[in-house]
Amino acid sequence: MTQPNFDEMSDKELLNYVRTHPNDTIAFHKYMDRLDARPGVLCTTDEEFEAELRKRIEGRSQ
Image (cartoon, rainbow, N blue to C red):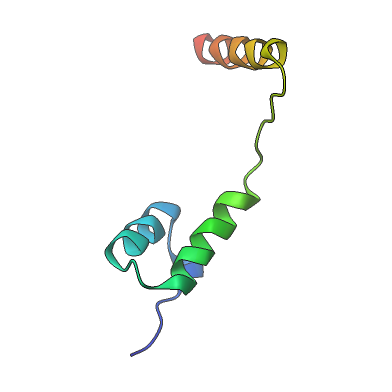
């Protein structure tokens, strides 16, 4: 059986594939790599968390 082309799948399609093929470690790692590549926000204090939360709330109201 041929391996699907995960690079051509959207994130949603790949997630659905991983859910329906839980033993496909290649697909799982590909999905995890995509998630890891996304920029994240690290809040190490309550003040940083509150500032990030305010920033996001204000961004939605515009």
